[in-house]
Image 1 (cartoon, rainbow, N blue to C red):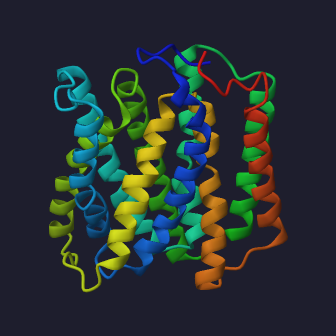
Image 2 (tube, helix red, strand yellow):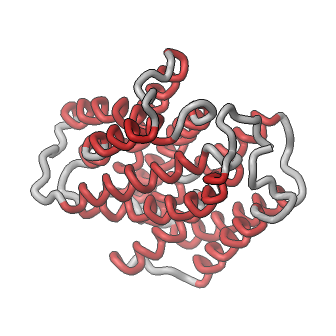
Length: 298
């Protein structure tokens, strides 16, 4: 369903779907680490990026000798993507501390459907067959998770609105990364986007008067390694081999996992409706990988 890319899809592409799911499992733990950190919401986003930069630059250098010469057009696109990512983290981390983990992750992953829609627009086609059924099941699953976890009061509502804004910013980040992955390997793309987003987050944390220097480093180190190095690293790799609709649906595994973390860590209880929503999302992921689901790029 997607335009062909300059990068050939070789044997490594067969691990892309597994990488997508694993990436989202790691990303789902991120909100918990943000809650456990003792710095401001925006400052947590800064440390997530800043601590990851040395490792990502090292990996980028190891995987691509041309990693720091992507060309002006692609380089500018990655930088813009990094700025959108910084805006996403600022809004999302704020939302995480104001609402339930399940709410924040579900609203933050509204980009799942927006990015899938971008894929259909880019391919100039409408969803069909298995794609349509998978999208319907995923939408129903997300609605069930939302309906069960939502709380109608001022504080969660503010957090939900921040998470929705984050989902919009994250969509633009994904589009920029998707474009860059047509010609560049994953680690150079992620390293440059991460470096571009770190400084704006630090400046914003200063402007907001947040606590920046942590008393406990463990949650921030785990946030950086788990969400930025492993989670985003595997996600950016998968994006080079999978269509936007598959990537979008794959991201819906995050709310289901985060809802379970919220239940275990904060007694944010799960219901039968939550379980049904998670099962529908799993069914959608199975369907999108069947023949006719366009799991691979066309």
